[in-house]
Image (cartoon, rainbow over all chains, first blue to last red; front, side, top):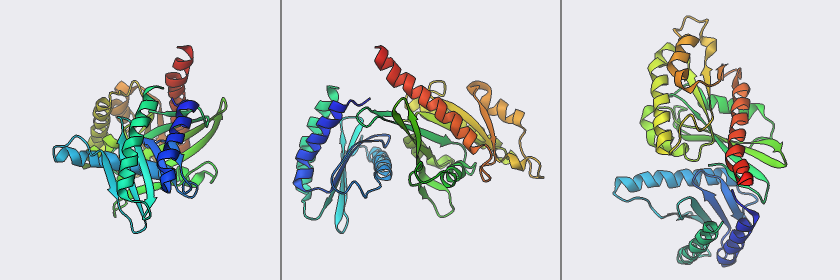
Length: 128
Length: 207
């Protein structure tokens, strides 16, 4: 169950760390593929339902690959496209953060900001 | 796990169609997709192999209207039925709120039906769930095959095989023609929303 205050606080955190850094869209989803928060100027013409379901499934599938090589899980996934790329990172045990960004933003910045954001989102959801 | 968004007043539930390979899970979803109007349905997503077999899952988001001011959004998923895709089925079951077990009337699928139900039980247990906890209904598909010369099972045989322990509601269906498809969906949606509301909303408000 998500309260308005948790969602609003999370949205502000995402806006301040990632959207202001120039990323196109950010989805915070759960492991079952439900969208918790969607931010960014590109979310309107994006099929977010399918994207969330596929991102969660993709994360699950790569976790199985991780187990095959003796790892528990891969904490982040990165898919590079010609113009836009996707960065997917686990937050806590239940949440996944999907960041879609263009070639004007560096992967290093995304990784840094996502790491910072992960901690604050975990804190916000831990307090709910 | 269902997601209840108090800010948007939305309840998201996940219903999974489970069953042996080629029993008609995707056909159920396709019929629902074609029969519903654009406003109530989302885009249908399928990941399939060349032989039209589901490789990962099919997804169909539906909007079922409002209950007590809450928008009910349901996501229908199917799993790949073939035995080798066990890991994928387990993944799709993550966060399930309701299930439809689609069984096949064909006699050649007798063993596969039982095997698939056992696999479902096993996978649910790995998510700390049981078919007693999460709502489930049975659909006996391909009942149009019964009067044909193709060897089929009897309803009694299917019930003994599959419903002895589940003891749930059964729907006879011909998914290709849409017979029984919406009846199944209606019942599982009702049970799922009830289950989610009791589990999350009522316990919270009383606690």
